[in-house]
Amino acid sequence: MKAVDTDLIRGDYFDPEAGKILFSNLGERWLSSRVVDPASQIRYRSVYRLHVEPKFGRRQIRAAKPSEIQAWIGELSQKHGASTVITAFQILQGVLDLGVADEAIKRNPAKSPIVQVPKWIGKKIIPWTDETLDFMIDSHPDHLRAIPVIGGGCGMRQKNDKERTVPLPEWVSQTSRIHIAKFKPRPLTLPWEKPDGRLVTHNVLFRWTDDKVLRARLYNEMIWRPGLVKAGIAPEPKKDKRGRKRYANNPQDGMHALRHYYASVLLADGVSVRELAEYLGHSDPGFTLRTYIHLLPDSHERAKRAIDGRRLRLRKVSDAT
Image 1 (cartoon, rainbow, N blue to C red):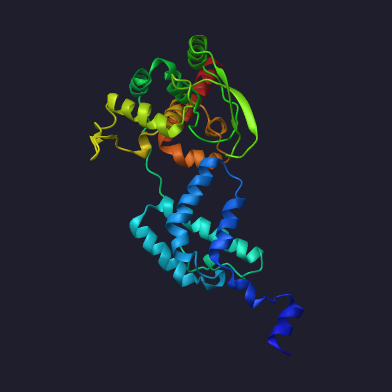
Image 2: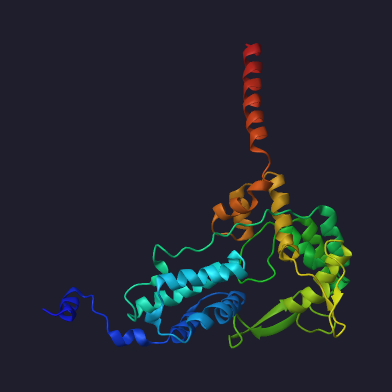
């Protein structure tokens, strides 16, 4: 019996012609199928265009070999951080998974035991002090002053499409009421989730003084990064050949620092990791714990106080009887 006939009987037969499809064809199909927020979609497409497509795009999907994928990971690791390498590998693996699902290849070579990706080791977070947050608030113009208050008081993200319920501190509530009284929210209609999405209208709290939409990138360049300089967090900007100011871009000092401040305050005051994970929108409390474990109050001291407190109470009861 021929091998082809045997494979047909077993259900293992693959059409050799199917594997000739170009990687780039499946790559575009995989990117278009991602159900993610716009920021993540931009990130995926950027990493694909810069790191995945140049290596594999013009080749047949069946041509990728485990040894070649491992060599590619090694090359990327020499030039880029673990986060970029991991994202590029996840994209490659996803496209090849699609190839398996579409029966273009029998198995995913990126899942071979010899393929190893670097582990991401997060940097130890050093949360802002109260004074630093106050400096950042004061660096904002009056019509945008409530932004760092809401971010630091509720742990908000700058970009994302997740919804969650968080406690509203009186500090944030009062600041928001003052802002709304001075700068009345006005309706704004924009496509939802994607450029050609359905139009949705919301009352928007923050805009530029000329009533234009407050875009994250421009806000970062015009307000946030100059604020870091005023607060003494970042160095003075340098000028490029055209005389334009170029600010230092340290990811640890982005708006995400407001979430870290929020987390540090809650943990210091005894809020549980499970509750903090819910407020931050983390689906896995374990991720929250790994990120902020170094900010938790010293467990040894708490353990000693717990035992000593219990024994002291028992001693008092014994003496009383």
